[in-house]
Amino acid sequence: MSQADEPDYSIENLIYSLDHIVLGGDHKEQLNEIDRLSSTQLVLKLNEWVKLANGNELADLCQGVTAIRKILSVVTTPPIEEVIATGVIPRLIDLLFHENTRVAFESAWALTNIASGNSKQTKVLIENGAITSFISLLSSPYIEIVDLAVWALGNIAGDGPDLRDLVIKGGVIDPLVKLLFSVINQGKGDQTKAMSLMKNTVFAISNLLRGTPKPNYNDIVGSIEPLGKVLSSEIGNDTSVISDIFWAFSYFTDINEDAIQHVIDLGLVKKLVMGAKYCISQKNNKSQYSTVLVPSIRTLGNIATGTDSQTQEIIDCGVYSVVGPLLVSEILSIRKEVCWLLSNIAAGSISQVNSLLKSEIVPYLLKMFRNENFVVKKEIAWVLSNILSTGGIPHVKYLLQIGFLPLFIEELYNLSETHKQYGKVLLEGLESMFHRLGNNFEEVLDYFEQNHGVEALSNIADSTILDVDLKKKAHHILSNYYQIETETENENENQNENENQNENQTENETQNNNQNQNENETQNNNQSFQF
Image 1 (tube, helix red, strand yellow):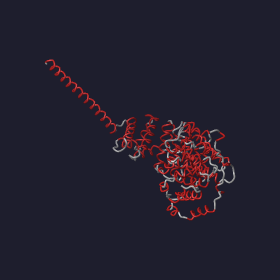
Image 2 (cartoon, rainbow, N blue to C red):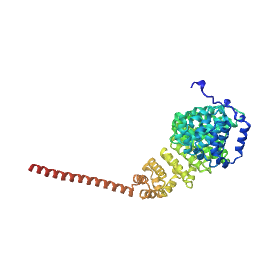
Image 3 (cartoon, rainbow, N blue to C red):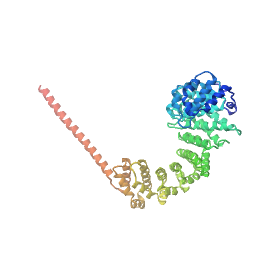
Image 4 (tube, helix red, strand yellow):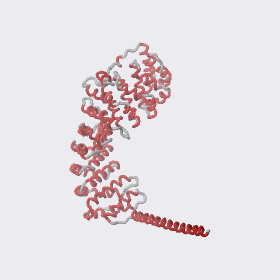
């Protein structure tokens, strides 16, 4: 398709004419009759509406597809399966391109509602070519129809990675990006319909970035810049829009370091931090507080999983000014996300560990640690363990001074067999501490033993229910720094001895077999010779 032939997605060229459709008197009366029927009455006459939708008379078509759309617009448990069973889906897809705008509009609305159903129901649309049809409708001159097409594509993409990838391969990203830029550039004025289109376009793009396995980076990278532009626009201040954009950023930055760098290059880190700060200032608005904060902190945490220079970007943009207030949030998921973010910073460079300690956040994490919910406590353990493994002797001494060690010992003493990963984090932290300090810090070794640390490790090493890897780690620390033998060590030795005995037995058996075989062969040879 040449550039001159490309569809025009600009809002200025989308004609708001559905409000001005002129219908004949009889037709209006038929539609008024539908409005007077209850949902139950409409469903009871479903086959009648389908028959009208399959007809050729305009009045019948309008009445049939409008009734089907109303049936599918029931708020609770719409009868999607019943409508599919009538076999009307291919007809509705054909009617998307009907010359009468009302027929096309009602058909698009009905199909959009079906696309909000379960995977099996959505698959029926796919099998009948709905993706290609909806993408074609993005160039419609009627904004209401474009809006419904975008909404339907967002619903389909949100059904899972397989359908998401089908929508992407259909070529949806470019027209969605053009639509979004068009909405942004529209300026002030009556924006009710433009706002609806923007919300649904952002929603669709967010779903196109969502899911595991991740979408191909090159296929979706072009969608990020317009999302950033929406945040800076005069109409980009809707909470649900900001939430969807931040979730889109979180999905995107979870793809690879190139995606992280793209977000940084577009200057979006500051917007994420500013968004989080604004939410903190509006903490009495619980809906806004959580729906925007969680994806913003998740995205910042994803960026901190990148290179050291990428991690430094969120530090330079003031992430610590956001983290402090959020550690006292009443919302568990926010505290968890914040501690996960900090654990990623703690796994960075020495200078970044220094910045974390200078922020004076770590002492508060220790105060949280003892009584926190386990999902948060686990992330705090990662923060401390990463500091111990990344930092040097000064960082280890700092954690010892503020009292991390008794807390770790208490956790190990009460370790549950269901918390294998958590136990691993605690033990690796201790192992890093001992490795950094070496055998020259007798006072730490004594302190650890006096506070029942050796006893806790021995319990783990000799446990009959804990994971074998945890037992080996505990034994390794005891053996290296306290020269203590455990049942785990004896078991390993006995296992080795048994293996050696088995090997010796096998060798003896082999020798005996060979000897017997040689004797038999000699006898056979002698027999043959005698023979």
